[in-house]
Amino acid sequence: MVRTSGLSPPGKAHDVAEDTPLLAAAEGQLPVAAVTGPDASSENSETATLSSQGSSKQSEQEDNSLPRTQLFLLCYARWVEPVAFFSIFPYINKMAQQNGHLDKADVGYYSGLIESLFSLTQMLVMVFWGKASDRFGRKPVLVFSLIGVSCATALFGLATTIWEMILFRCLAGVFAGTIVTIRSMFSEHSNARNQARAFSWFSFTGNMGILFGPMIGGALAEPATQYPKLFGDIQFFVDYPYALPSFAVGCIGLSAVVVTILYVEETLNRDVYTIPEITNGATTTYGTTDTGLDEETLLEANKLASMTTWQLLKSPGVAIVLYTYAHVMLLAFSYTAIAPLFMFTPIDLGGFEFTPAQISLFMSLNGLAQAIWTLLVFPPLQARIGTLGVIRICAYLYPLWFVLQPGFNYLLRQHDETLDLVFWIFAPLSMCIGCGVSMSFTALVLAINDVSPSPLVFGTLNSLNLSVISGVRSFSPALFTALFAISVNNQWLLEGYSIWVLLVILGLGFALVSVVLPDTEKLREEREIARGYR
Image (cartoon, rainbow, N blue to C red; front, side):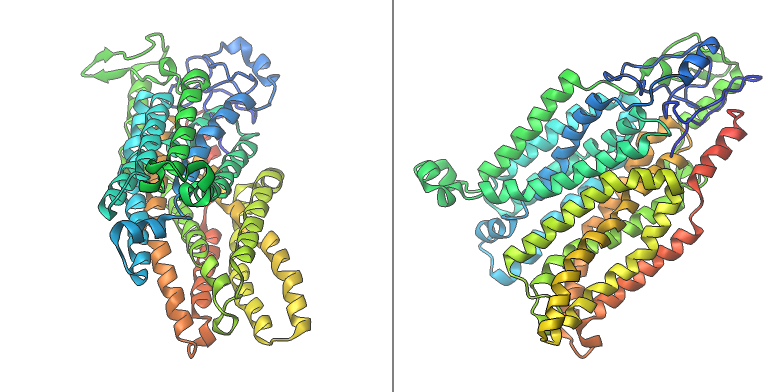
């Protein structure tokens, strides 16, 4: 959990309760130390202002409820990104084969290249969007990014060559500011007591995007073939068989643009966020002039607000938390990539030999269970054992989760009816229970909140984190599907289970990292004490 952290004018200290908005400030407090965010007690998330010292009792009595309307609107905007990313999965292979006149053996290479370049593009621009949201405000960056990703996704369906597919997909990757900005806005809408609940909705919305994206893409691709009575006579959909799903997702994105412009409120309070800049004894003020702060304190404010990326990485706890997040996402991306292949692979080669319908059922079960863990279990569990406690439990369970997969295949390899029954009882059950390790994703988001040295670099820190994740996503699916193929084709090596041995080792690495991971909540408290905030 994150508390406001910051500097106070000399001789002043401010008490912070758990129901203080994460980025809220008290009178005369350094803007970078505790930036005012929207009041968590208001349904409409009215922008909080600097309160007087005499209002501290009133602040303590404020309702702790989240601004549900604003979070719901942000969830809708958040939903666009995974829908846009995953909607092309059902048809990208066939589209690449047709556009590039490819052999079936080469399709996987080009479809993988398209997705890898998308993630690589995101990695290159993510920090830019984070800094832009810190400088110009959250809402303008969110609106601009939504417009860009909506238009680029709509254009993707009109591609007629492989290079056009790559161009439009990379263009969608350029507008990667949505998730960076929304994560910052979620933090600015929540406080130390309710941020776990807020970010559980953030993660849940992402899961829903993963669920509905492929459904939209699969249902609307090749409409002239799938629905000849409706679209068979429309030549446009014959010539561009993948335009309809792309247009549909683009329209969803543009509807989010309209909703954001009309109803989403700016969470970056510019009057409070703006820091007077002092140079050679002259004060240049970009925002409010009545700060009540002396020159030394203002200089310290400028130092925090203008941190470079390298300085941010050297801040206590930042580097190891970013690494831990990258490590756990490597585990997640690798499993997500090989799971459909593993379920499809024949039993004697190390898989489950599922039908497409069974694979879809298991994957849907996984998504539903993951959403339940994130939405219903994570908030009370985090409140009870803390962010670090949740991370460590998930880290310890990750290797066990990987061990179970080849174990279930071993049961099927015996070709025994009793063991087959054991498989069908416990495999779905383990799927529901095991995907609880996904709570580590949300817990690490909260850990990033905790180690942020200043709210004014919050967008930059989030973008840095997501840049690393995009980098991991750019290579991990292709790498681990190739390693899975090598494992399956070399049964002499651990009977085709070598890929799972590798994943168990990586899972144990996560467990070891979690042991040395600092308690980020304590780091936050120590920072507050050092700055005289407690």
